[in-house]
Length: 361
Image 1: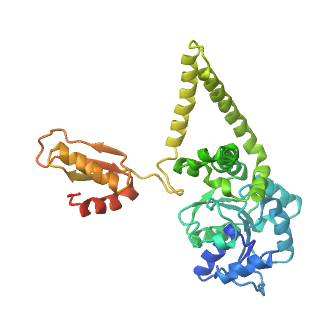
Image 2 (image 1 turned 90 degrees about the vertical axis):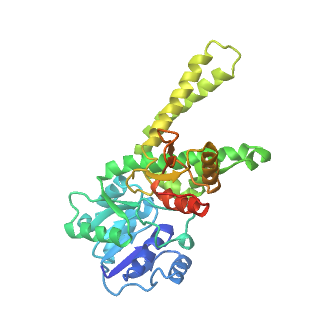
Image 3 (image 1 turned 90 degrees about the horizontal axis):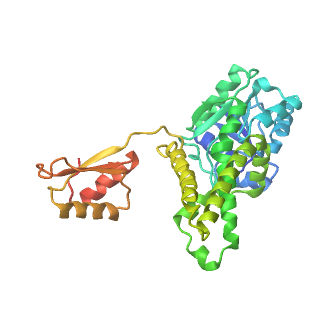
């Protein structure tokens, strides 16, 4: 790949342009907003000059409702030899492209699963897609050259390609992206009704739950509307769980002790299923495959006071333990304990403990 065009210089489009330019690809920036193009170009994302000849690939990075029309217009203008997009909805976009008579042999649907709560070219980063999944949704009419070019794009952005059919993609993102965003927005909206003193108590948990609610409302309304068919059934099942939880809490708040045991069981069941669902994704980060934990061996000399000091030092380091393995025999030669940690915690915890005088293996 030598040349590319990015149509739409928001967060995703500019981040792709930064990645491509950084890999030596001559990248042309196109947007109906000239100020957005100027900012993206000033950040080194590419050139605002139009290409003199069709580029190797055009990336269409506009809202879902505009994707098909933009592809049709750019194909008519012969902007590129291959086209892809970044919309988080694929079935509707493909159907609209067919209805507009787009050349789908040169088209590969795409969706990089990365982003930030901020939007616009100022928020863009060249490493935004590093090790993140990037779904491609080729159809039976997609040409081999087009798919290979799209795979090259994913590689140049250091992302991990995943091939899915459009309907499978839409059901997947409804579950892992669109529903969580809607839930975050609904939870954050409750803060508007809270007393000032209550809002001031909000900590990391509330901030984590509502982080993505800061996204662009108009863009997300467009996304959710485009994937309504896949999202609506999930929301209906969630509504059933919310009704179960609300009914259980109402019974627990009442004065009659008789139904409270069943109510507590219903509430516990909702929470247990949440724990089970969380466990399916907890070992992964950024789309990377789950890795087994690391065990650090630390000599404590078999003395309880030393074990307590070790745990205090771990706490001071502000790094989390997954588990601890105590020696079988209290009088073992060095009284070593095993600290079970996530792989990315092993090195910083080792350094922190060694700086405090612990022997860590």
